[in-house]
Length: 124
Image 1 (cartoon, rainbow, N blue to C red):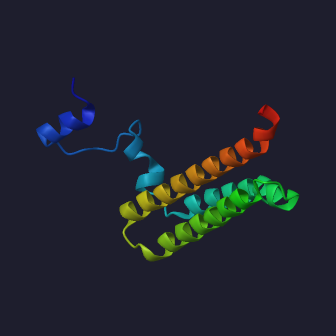
Image 2: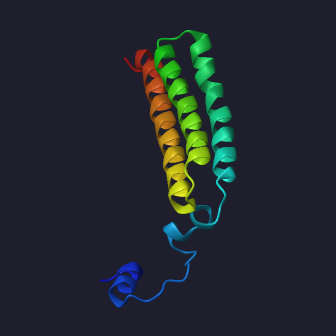
Image 3: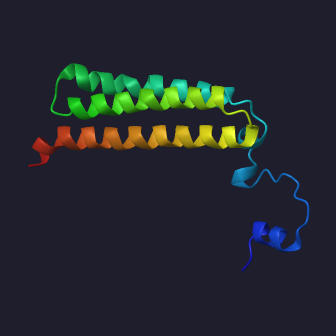
């Protein structure tokens, strides 16, 4: 079975944007990149709330929360750096998407580890 992209590659036909394909989203083709920074900044602000609360509580998960918060802020700095330094649109937008995906994965894993540490004494 062939997908639409492999059929296009075989025929060599010019490709019009197909909004149903993941790689043809307007955020990856036409955006200036500002929306990625806005969404990442909002995500960082929302994610820092529980992380700072865990650090302020002083529980055994505080070191993990501190490292997660540091990596999250570093990811936002990397995202802004990519936006300001990469000049070509498509590679810039793909790098911004990758940075944001990395930020979300680091935060999710860090919060899951924090929850596991806090709940460990309760399940024993």
